[in-house]
Length: 448
Ligand SMILES: Cc1ncc(COP(=O)(O)O)c(C=O)c1O
Image (cartoon, rainbow, N blue to C red; front, side, top):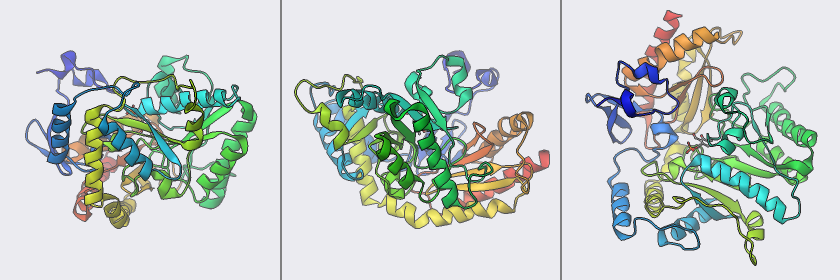
């Protein structure tokens, strides 16, 4: 069985597997996964920010089997099926404020892309056809299909595919650790500064042309940038002032990652649209959604009005049934409460790593953290491209995995190690994560 011959791995340097097989994961249970040689690893990334309830949950497999034997597939194009109806109602009940209308997709990029199409279509219907542009943040990842990729703010992921969908613009993110000079001394001042960059971009482009702002509650790429206090409040004011939709891209941050069903609830803001996927089914089967406010849905509910958009597998019955069973687990095991009760412990275990010379910043929220690695703690000097390549690709990812921790060493922004364990994790898992990170990061430092 050779992965190299036929399997095209995503975002991977295929040549790396010309002679050696990629790590092949064959089984999962709780917070742990096992490779083909029987070796066990702590899943410090919940697969890919996905497996909220942990691996090997029989009742999700049962829900899948039951739905597949009753009705494996039917579209939601002019027809409906009970799982999609029930899930839409449940999500409407969980989502903040008047986000009551659920459009299902099969994944996150599709949800992001659907929200842009909806924003454009909405503004046409309400007589503002010029509003079509999107503002998003530097280094933010919003997916890879052409529309979502255009919104993504990581140049290295885009350059091979230009020209992309026109009309997207970038503003600064909320990386307090690396805030530019003049961007405020306190988190509050910085939050105000960063939010005001959004208004500046809207005014520069012309409010009559801007349809939406896409923000994650905590930005993943770059290594977990939480919003400074007051940031989202200010963004909401700006969006209201210019009639721009606030899209909360919660493909990672929804479903317990931050201790709430939705990240917007965690930070107390009201989006016009939430996009989500991943944890909605804990990854047992693909499903995504955009959850839309009554105001934005309204023009589509009369006469011949239609949102001319759909996806064959959006709202797949098996996906919807698994999502229902997944949310049952959330309720029964109070997973959001569990994250809220344990998030300080997670943070303090990671913050203990500050005694290592290579750890510059520990940031994040809930069960979602990034650890930025630096060459010099005092000056915050980062690594050269060559050092970063040697450190992250050449050593860290492999060494962490060999030491029994699956997580991610990422250099889409400054070099970071990212952690987002399943939500069932507790103090014992945090201690294991800390101990593996401590020994591997110490070794990385000694190799510099
Ligand atoms: C914030 C955000 N938006 C969109 C996406 C794209 O989701 P998918 O990979 O399911 O298309 C991701 C994926 O990681 C994401 O993190």
